[in-house]
Image 1 (cartoon, helix red, strand yellow):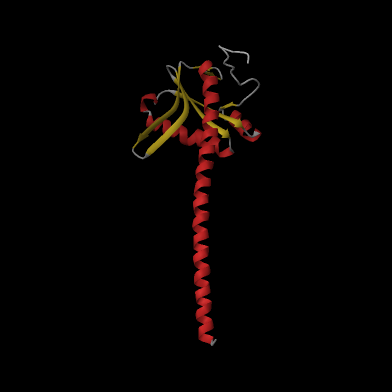
Image 2 (cartoon, rainbow, N blue to C red):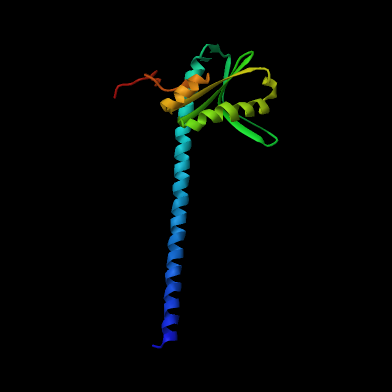
Length: 176
């Protein structure tokens, strides 16, 4: 086999190898897409579960700090021009609004997002409440101590699980 034949054979081997690599990369990409979808769904479910827990607690007792509210809504969405936002829990009374942001695991930047972005967006999206006082609360199943301390110093309420957070529904309990 002369030099040119060896070069052509090497190029052919590289082409075959590259085709196998491309096929394997396509399989890997497909698996990553499936994994991403599952993780996104899992994260969404965990977040919704946390929202449900805190919504139920607030719905039973419409109070944050010393502010009593009359009504509560969950997943309040609105858009206006280029502003689009969703508020996990919003409480209302005659002159005050309570905005509650819920996370499964709270991160330090969540506090600033609530304080600045969520408040500004609420005022933009709901101008009928422009003269209302806005109280903020950040709820989570896991909240770092530094976030709790910072929130308290800034007048933002913290909601976290404590003690018996389960409701037992057993109206028609049967022994089996």
